[in-house]
Length: 228
Image (cartoon, rainbow, N blue to C red; front, side, top):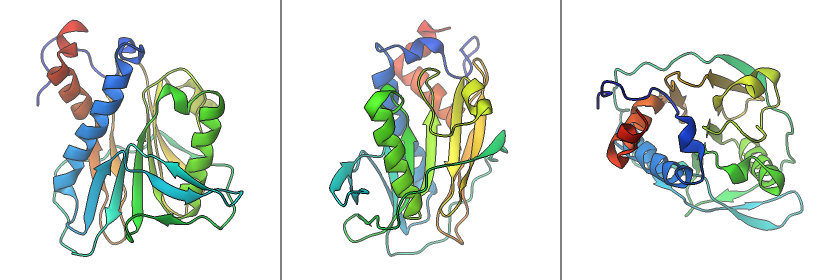
C-alpha cells in the first residue's frame, strides 16, 4: 500500500485519544499478525490475544495476554524471503529487574518463542504498569523474545533511560537471554521504523514495517483522510 499525498506520516497525536486508541490498539495487533503469518517458517504459528498461564514470584498462577505471540510448532520449513530491510536501532539500554528462575510457561504443550506487545494506557500507569513490568521480566527470564511497541507519549516506560523518556514513541526488542534491549526512538512526525521480530536460531529475524502497517490502518479505518 502506498501513502496517499498529504497523508500524515508516523503516529498522529489524535490517535492517542480514548476515542481512537482502543481501535488502533486492536487493529494493529491483527495487522501485525496478518503481516507476519505468511513470512514465518512453517514451524511457527502466530496468534492474537492468547492468554499465557505463568507462575509469578509468589508461586501463584496468573493469566497474561500478549497482543501477539509466536509459537513453535513441529514442521520445519525454509524461512520466507523478504526484501524489506530492518532499520538499525537508535541505541541499546540495559533492562533491569531480573526475576527468580522458577517461571514456567505452557501453551498447548508447545514453546512460546516471541511476544509482541502494543502498549496501552493501562500498561503505563499505576498498578497496570507494575503488572506489565513483572510479566515482561518473567517472560525474559524464561527465554522469550520481547517486542514492545509504545505509541503513547504519556506514562512510564519499562526501560528506564533518559533517552527513552525523551522520545515521543519507542519500539524495543529484547532478545532471549540478553540483559539489553535495542531501542528505536521516534519523534512526532517521523515515519515508524522497520524493526526485527526475532525467532529461534538459526531462523532469521522477520522484518516488521510499522509505518506500512500504520498507514494500512489509517487507510482502512478512514482516519487517514480525517487526520490529513
